[in-house]
Length: 158
Image (cartoon, rainbow, N blue to C red; front, side):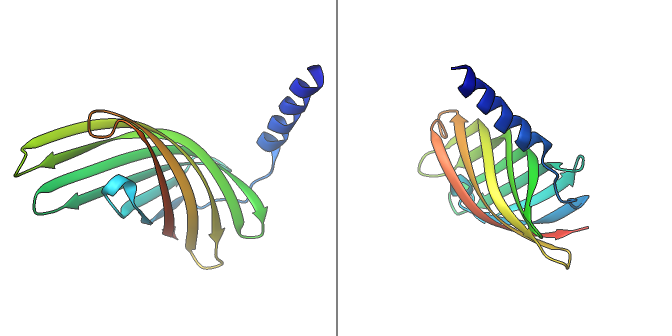
């Protein structure tokens, strides 16, 4: 049992001590996925240190019988794989709202907790593409389950 605990702590410490590639101070773009029915999100990333960043995503949709938005905030850790390839993981949460018109007039605000794991490529030009997986645990009548969101991100770095 001691060996298992020491091995787990050693792996965790080595992950935390890995040197990361320098990440851009800011990046803005699109995160193209299903976003729990809201589709593409406008996304902004802000570096908080050498290998940490904050990601903010806003998705909205307007239709003939409904309006909705979803806002997510995630704290991410970034590790370099090789060259321009990085992988990242993060945690966070957010809030969203739907407003349905006819035939049922109803509105719902919901909250969610989220995780995030993905891979990205940082080009020599100020372009970053990523593919990530975001499980979300919803709290509210409309969104009270586990949702899996897979998305492609395209961002301009500055």
